[in-house]
Image (spheres, one colour):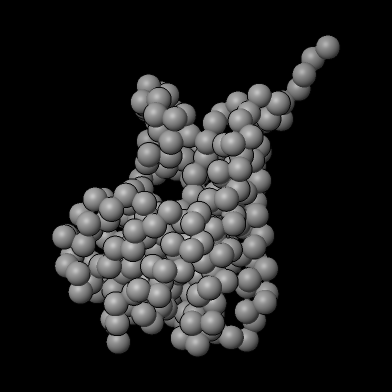
Length: 249
């Protein structure tokens, strides 16, 4: 039986890598995102019978619903939801941060995620499917400038655990994957396009790659159906835990 995955934020980074990993394994994949040309690259790579591009802004609930209603016949039965779409904006401390950036992170990382999850829950329950939410170590370990981004990812982690509890007995598996440093477009987006800042962060750090995280997503999704990974925290070996700050008088 061919299974179907829906992957949000599939135009780059973890999402694009996950689409490729599942498509290579013979899954049908619905790839969602705002950048049509990037999604089309995935369709061209694997074929329209394997990858379907659903182009919409994840924050637009009406566009999301329309895209789901318009899914082709072969992509309507969804077995796996990968809630990957998300972003960080800004590195300033809270007292200097942009409220608009905060709202964008909340709308993208929280509101959109719960909206899509709520919409697909009946189908996932009917098929005894799975939900994989991409959280972050920022949801567990605070750092200067992490403020709202860390808060949104803490929500994703706790929401995942809550879903796991609510879905008890349905056969639906729920996992929160919580990556540390991985080199994608993440820092470019966070710094509003500062290439130098991105290069400075990753140079010499031997960070994880999008493919590393896609492999973990695939691993979790293809475990035997009686097994559930509740949380999976993963970092590169070069990253570990920082000390507490002290403001000296």
